[in-house]
Length: 639
Image (cartoon, rainbow, N blue to C red; front, side):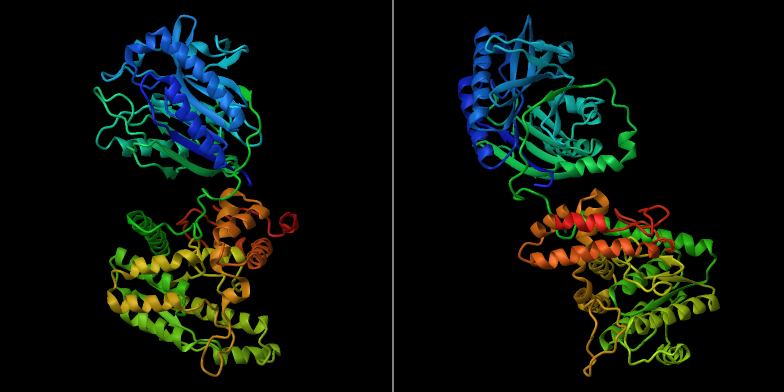
């Protein structure tokens, strides 16, 4: 489905030196994985014999039994149509190799030998096995098979489309330049590791970190399956650690020390990995080194559904926990550092800000205060202006003024009503006609006042517009679109509540209570008159759709170049039961139309710090022509 493939990492039960028993366990997990829709399953290192056979590896009986069961495992991939990657010792000539066998459609498609052979006290592999590079460029004929089998460390596997993968074994990942790096540079989007790691306190954390880091370094999916508790415990213990990561994100992990084996899955977006590489010049600038032989496999089916896909509804918002706190602190620090630099560089004496009681201006207010504290200046160096107009509600007005008083900033009120009425008379506009002119005149009047007060006070006017509004062009050109420094320029709307909650934690209960009510207030530009009871007549999300949908589209559109049909499918899965399909499609159409047609506003946007994964700055962010047509994208949505 749209480039997603279901992959599995398996840790079967095992008897040391009993290939027949082990093959049955592997086939059982193959059947289970195939029934779950997996396209590929990776098993631990030497999973056919067990890793801890010791000098029994020299025994002809064990070697022959392993070869015989390799044939039965290959046949099983006909009944259970998946790619199986299993580990076993293979005798080639007078040398024994620790290999990964890639099986599909009833055949052994290739043998990948281990590149790095450890020589530890607990297990000296060089005692038994030969280094794999000696097989590069070769094919081999094994006694149990009537066809030649490609063998070597120089193999790359191709299952059609963007489904290309490489294989390495355990210690290979821990060497200075893992084979998976070369495989990735030669086109592998998926990397499989067959391992047999012994356990020690703290070792699992380092293993997990290594797998996640390698997936990020290679912009790839990385699957790791390590030998389980049934290995010999003569001197060491194995725990059966299985991990699946993609581009620096851990997607799945099993519980170690399971006594019944384990099987974990993840649906990995391989097309996304390819798109990440497309825009990652540091990846593409790396030399691929010596080439890889390409092994053409039968086509691999995409995932049948989204059951194991990591689809987050609010991808800009870090998940709760210590990591969230750290990331929110980093965002605030970046905003404050950028503002402090601009404040000092311009030799401004004050910060100027229009406050409305909405999310955006509240965040800018808190960032302004934090920046002044960083510079060891009092909060009253920030001048906040409330500029009530025809649509200002009592709720937002009182929240804005109460928060300013709690924070100790200077607060000034200037009504824009009379000035706007005079402006309407000047241009011959009927104030009863509440159209675009009526709305934009208020936004531009506010900006005029703020700019002039900034000049008067030798101040720096803070912009309040957020990333979501900038993406949609949801601002008045040369009104709230303009400022002297846009501190929220890379902060999406869905992230602001988390930032306000984070910043309000140190302000006392009075500040926290105001912030909670601001978060709960419907988003509105407040440019149309309120009703007779003072309630809002204008709610942004009723006009353009939910911001969490637009932020979801923006995240996948910019970061991964997702096509419109895929954006819709991802959103329908992520928001299943929350928004109906029709609403998702309408919101997506509007997103695409506005993103293209409002680029002219972004082409002349003020400076602002990049504090997240996306910037739409025309200088250091997203670059596109102001007159590009959205028709090809809209047509793709209709297909």
